[in-house]
Image 1 (cartoon, rainbow, N blue to C red):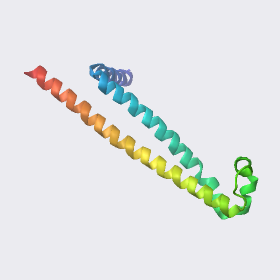
Image 2 (spheres, rainbow, N blue to C red):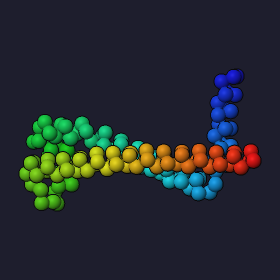
Image 3 (cartoon, rainbow, N blue to C red):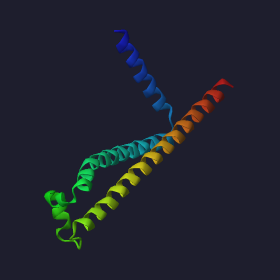
Image 4 (cartoon, rainbow, N blue to C red):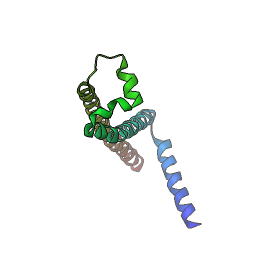
Length: 130
């Protein structure tokens, strides 16, 4: 019973803090949630591409066995396995760099938002104390 009351107190505390936030902070919190979601999706994508990329690096002749790659390059100018491997390498690097950049942006935004919310709460408590 004590455990449930403790988790209910934390939930109550979070909702009460959220209610005290102004509209601008709530909007920033919403956009931060969106960047977290995008960061998570890109992270899953970059992790999911590691094993196929390594298997293609090990045996480039198996590129044609992957149906998605076959359909993707059927209509392109890339014919040799080395050209396809180079293109997939560039695509993989771009996805890793994009994922890392979004993750850093997310970290920066969350730190700024936490600092701004802390400043708002501190200013409000100072005003109420006076």
